[in-house]
Image (cartoon, rainbow, N blue to C red; front, side):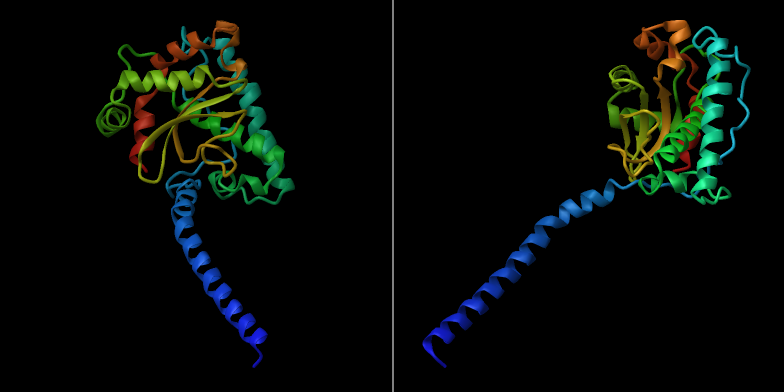
Length: 252
């Protein structure tokens, strides 16, 4: 074997070993990143099953006075929310979605569907949860039990939690929602999403299981509060149905 061939062979072996080490080190270094990415994926506990049909409002249109006025409730429920339910079913037919399965199964892989599906599946899901998360106003309205314990653990106090959640709602640019949601370890988190997105969606910047959301689209408050979104958000705490929110949290 010539000297040149021996040199080339040694170089090839050396480069191969170095390449293998680089790949090994690279995979080792990437492991935490891959794990982190995996933990950010959307998930749905099996006992959450939202249908495609709009459910009856659990109270009268004027039940949330004087926090949410009757006219806003009626228009919001019968026009905006009803439209999302109709349109998501139209999209489901067009895209051959099995509507006997939970809507959550669509949301967690929403990137596979059309913009129409994304907007209306999100709009329908968000509103179905929103209606159930409210009730007639109650003095000193606050959660109890395990949910309150976890709020204090994750946010130091209930008042500080309300401030953080309120800030997320007040500073959401344009239309959207603010959320209290959990990750797979049941840690409570706060965030916001634009338009009708939510933490279940695989395209969302925040990912987890939503247990409470506030609608900060202008149609949710403008008749009563005009441009004073902050006042709407601050007053809204009086009508939060903490029993429903706690039940969602307990089912995780």
